[in-house]
Length: 155
Image (tube, rainbow, N blue to C red; front, side, top):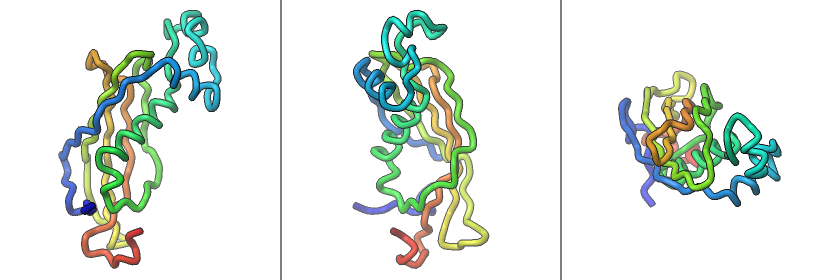
């Protein structure tokens, strides 16, 4: 596997991060473990809510986004972690049978002033359902080793 370094990304780059179909079983399983709101636990609970049906937790949608990022580019990047998420918005319910697809766009790229072997990529991720309706948007910074960083810094 060839790693991608900070220099391999440029402002404006847009990455396809793949797609995934969502099932009722995985929505309920996630909800039982992490977010047991009635509209995440059953079809009946969903119908009784403003969501109109069983819907995935926003946190589950974030976890799905993370997996999509890992599978499409992050695990092949000299990633050094992330300082956090700047913004995250859940724009529409994710329901059983939805097929989610996503993109990641590099908003900016700069070297760290305090750690010259690290580059900071600001990334915007957008997730859409099969009707091209946006369901999630998130902006965050990714810390990525530079190609000239001492290898001891790249783990």
